[in-house]
Length: 426
Ligand code: ATP
Image 1 (spheres, rainbow, N blue to C red):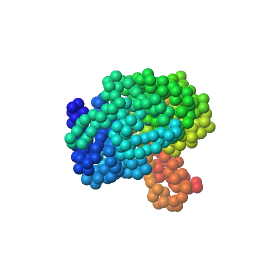
Image 2: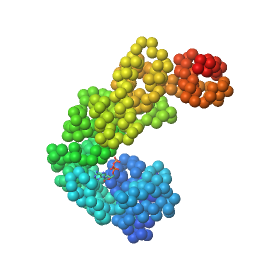
Image 3: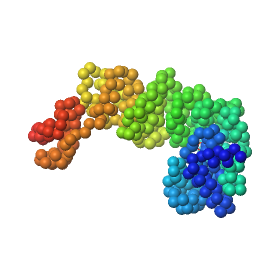
Image 4: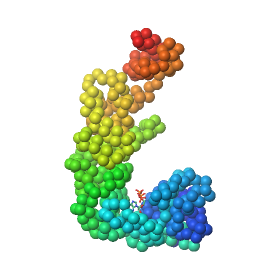
């Protein structure tokens, strides 16, 4: 059996976990399966760090029992009948009750009831994501492929399971494009017709915006997000995201530069501060909008505050920063004061958007030198000099830091000297 071999070839802890879960399912007399993207990636030989498990029984109770037997951390989502196990070596596990879904209204959430594995697979997006592998001992490794997923994987096709798939859930359009471009597959002919029909019926304008947002984020988390973005635009435009938003001629170039900059950042600064590359792409995506429209989109789609503030900050600061940093004789403290309040994603974006040698130089100096500067003296030194803690405390320290960045003070003694002067002037 091909899949038995593939499971045996998984990293030891993963294969052991799957076998353990299978034996527990035997004990409980329920059927258990690994499903979805995990099976797809197993077939394609792509490492996957998330296992999706489905049981024909109570998924939450099963997860809780697994967690207590293996001393794992479990988070349950009672409303959805799902649970997540963490604490395993390098992977996590989502467990769900096998279910049947009926869409009573287009683009709304379905009515859910318990179902068999065949029902659970039928509610999925594409045939390649609608396969399961049994893990109970007597049938361990048996592929359950009711809808031709294995064949489509071989042919490289993204095929929907039924004509209403994209009407029921229009976010599947974004998913189809994402998988097509990720694996260099093709959306199957009939699925393409169904997609066009859903687009024609403006289903993407109707679907809940936060669901669209989540799929959009997944596109920007792909390795080369410009590919699905281009394809998405060709298939259905972008007006369901924001009125008037079009594919920009210079996006491919910016996205390419962004990928290079992200790789560069990782090489030099990964240990220093974590950045989220998808936010860089997302901010580039929303950059063509006016500030007002960008703010509206952030609100409409309920983007996380940290994300929307970075998208908006790029819009608000780019022109000002470009103007200031392209002046002649910019001193280090000016660069520091301009860039220090901003996130690293936004700073890297300035460099990408500015395409200006001097600006790049300032930004790199900021990242390599200025932003790593620390003072020798501390708050307690100021107290010893007689300054009472308060707002002026921080200002004195900041002013000394700025002087240090400009090379005006070099060691502890000079820092103390400047502190005395500033306190005296107060
Ligand atoms: P990735 O490699 O991007 O994580 P994945 O296939 O694991 O891909 P998830 O979003 O984690 O994707 O979803 C897990 C599984 O749930 C999918 O493989 C698919 O079977 C099913 N699924 C997810 N979203 C939908 C949807 N909108 N409609 C139907 N089925 C879905």
